[in-house]
Amino acid sequence: MMGLTDIKHRIARAEAEAGRAPGSVTLIAVSKVQPLARVEAVLRDGHRCFGENRVQEAQGKWPAFRETYDDIDLHLIGPLQSNKARAAFELFQSIHTLDRPKLAKSFARFAQEMGQCPDVFIQVNTGEEDQKAGVSPAEADGFVADCRALDLPVAGLMCIPPVNEEPSLHFALLAKIAARNGLSGLSMGMSGDFERAIALGATHVRVGSAIFGERVPEAT
Ligand SMILES: *Cc1c(COP(=O)(O)O)cnc(C)c1O
Image (tube, rainbow, N blue to C red):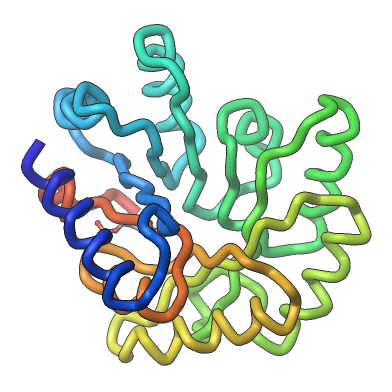
């Protein structure tokens, strides 16, 4: 699939330009609201790492693909309601949107019950936007410590920069917060800015439309 090949080349080039090891950046192909045929084309091309932003939509799509394709690695990248947390635990290998103490406590309880836990990324609202999820930069260190005290496997931090600001400022801020907390994972960068994110240390880029084509507008 053309989009996938092109994005993989651009990631490899951005890794090289940043002096980073080849393969150090994980490509999460964001398949939300894409036609199933497009998603399956990317699976057939051998890609196995995907991102979804809604639990219910993912539940309707991925169990069937998992019957045909092995080793699918699913990342939840959208806001998680408490009443969907258990379902998210069962479906996803990574959750990028841990953003509040109540959810952290639920995760700790499920982890104990199930004997396993997805990797978690803590979402930081780097732009301090009212409408956006995530802990504020000032709360981040404390929340990381709280999650660790609950024995959650904190893999790193995630951000979605404000639409009208230079994303690099937000990527740099996220990298700084991660570094001072000893966290190596950085989930940042989308179709329009993933190369800038890689230059600033992204370990996971979330790329949708540049791989699959434009999405039909979402209904929220
Ligand atoms: C939809 C989405 C993406 C992918 O966006 P594109 O611009 O299509 O690459 C990345 N991250 C999050 C959190 C998203 O919701």
